[in-house]
Amino acid sequence: MRSSNPVFSRQGAFTRDTGYAGFGPSQSTGPQPQSPSGGNPYANNPYDQQQPLTDEQLQQMYQAPPAGPLETGRMTMDDVVARTAMTLLTLVAGGAVAWFAIPVGSYGIAMGAALAAFVVAMVINFRRSISPALVLTYAGLEGVFLGAISKALNTYFSGIAIQAVLGTAAVFAGMLLAYRSGRIRVTARYQRIGMAVALGFVLLMVVNMVAAMFGADMGLRSGPLGILVGVLGIGLGAFFLSLDFHEIEQGIRGGAPEREAWRAAFGLTLSLVWIYLEMLRLIAILRGDD
Image (cartoon, rainbow, N blue to C red; front, top):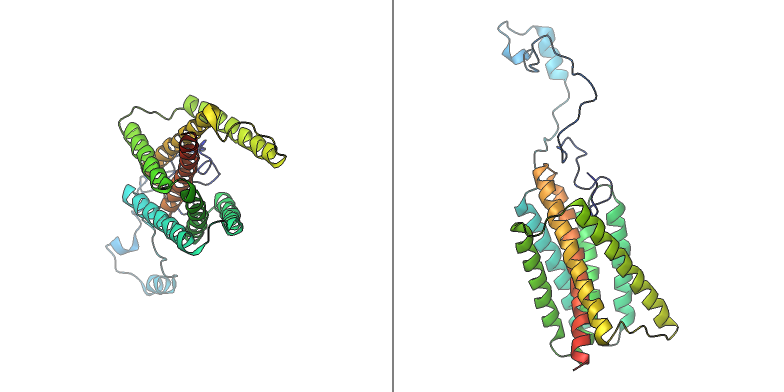
């Protein structure tokens, strides 16, 4: 199954590579041969024979390779919650280090952490198998960046970090409630429209950044247009959360491996970081216009 979610849409996400079931029903490429025992694969079990085993059969059994470990774990909601909690705690720990250790104005460290986090996120996204160590590394680096930026903004707008955290938590809770109650349904049309808006938003931000480098002001940092863009950014973050919820639900139903809970935690963290940054920007605009 291919998703429109930027994290889960890569090939191999929430699928099996060690004998686990996929999302949908298995498809057969042709008629399956029937065994002489009427399709029962255990009918010829040597342990269930009435006749005693011969010396040759015993020798073959002793020379057989030992059975490897049997993977039976399937991803559950508890797994997703636990991995997400670990990831967010790592992010908060990185933010606390930056808040208390990085002086205000040391933007070089913050931007270095942001760049490193971006590289790690790309590595995670394009790896076929999920790496818990890389997910936690990303969370720590992103936490350093967010902590430094939050501290800098907090010097101008006291309490803005707490306001942004509360706002992010409110958006998460609201989207979770809306999704679980069925008020939001992730359909193909819903995904197409949302991703088209997201692409346009990202392009707008890139153009604004390039314009700012040349001293031009497109009015996206203040005023009514800035507020509108900030609200749109938060709305897109909520949209990404709904995709996360949908893919997690599908993964659990499809019997995704337990380790894929780390991919779910990574996707949720990306969405929450997006919402938090947009929340910071919107609150700064609102308080700056007072």
